[in-house]
Length: 343
Image 1 (cartoon, one colour):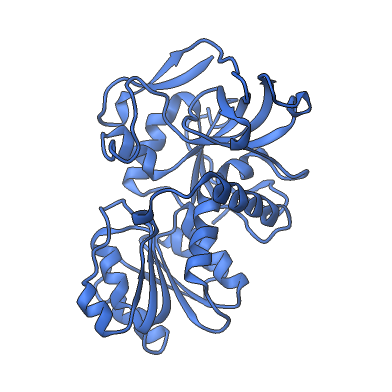
Image 2: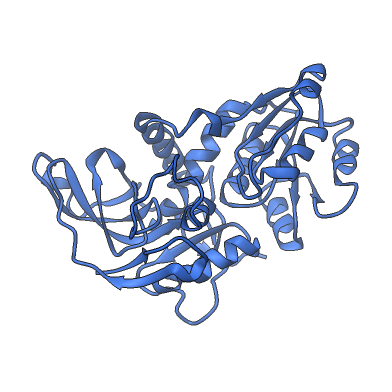
């Protein structure tokens, strides 16, 4: 089977196409024929050697953490009825035509939902719904969502669905336009001086809730855009962890919510949130914005684009060479999961 290997830590060029034997399921396992592999920013960090204490890898390894496809084979103890079913899979690998996963790591894809849409929710859907629960946006209050990646676009939709007013902070016209399309009432350019003051002006004194998807200095600045007594939820690591001043936050009555410090959610929580994300996508309440798709062998290009922050929305690797004509395909999932062009 075709797969991607990381034989040494480094730049995107270490993502090397290889041929590997087809995997065989062990007891309690399944083999999933992948249609689409999820690509997240964490993949780029691990490829570069970051986080080996939190996310141990043994070189060489197949990167990724799942996607969606169909079950091809099952091991002992797994019901044969799984064979042929479309599933989302969240496991320790993903950039390959076939992956082995425990039965507890797969979730049926609802009828009518495209596998690409399901793949786009494997991590970002779980993350967004987890953060939505923690932040608990309320009807009528202002919510600031910084960064417009896969999870950020879903947080915009979830806050709007809860009746909140959203102001989105993003770095490009295309990302800000997408946020408006998804329901944001206001947008700001966080690369411009004075963006925090602009948020405070738009919201009448500061947002009640802020989601930070970038981390670093941008994440810390997001705290300044909040009203006293607000909630700050940070999950970004692109520029390191956000490090707001805790004494200042306490004096202002801010609640700092940092789920990454708690470690990854347990399997049951992941299953619950993934099932909910797929259900909401099937009914049109969540629409992952798929900004770029690449054939498997162009995984390095996908990583470069993520690092450069040029992708608007979500990135996927397609196993059928679906983007083989030479440029990423801009896509947005409809409520039924069909791809549409986006501005």
